[in-house]
Amino acid sequence: MSFWESIKPARRAPVAVTVAVAADQRSLTLTWDDGHIATLSAQHLRQQCPCAECVEEFTGKRVLDPSRVADDMKILEVAPVGNYALTFVFGDAHRTGIFNWSTLRQLG
Ligand SMILES: [Zn+2]
Image (cartoon, rainbow, N blue to C red; front, side, top):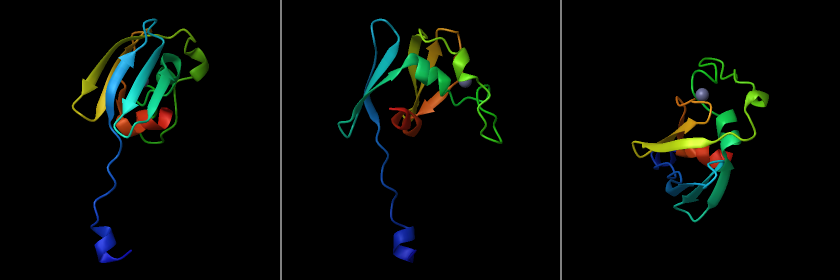
């Protein structure tokens, strides 16, 4: 890589501009600033929770057994974390996961 390539700014990652929880609380629809729209189920989000309780910090191994996440999992609350992530309160009271934009984008 040349010097000039190495100092080029990285391509900006997409950011969600609207976040809407469905009326039944079982899914979340994100609209991204590049026009992409994705709906993620609460179950899938809960299964992919990136927090230290669900994923081993050093190995990256998922501790949470996805089959133990109910298929009628709900999102009770959603809140922004700064301008880089969202955090959720799930139907099983789990609330420690911080989902940054790139994680959310990969899920949807
Ligand atoms: Zn978690």
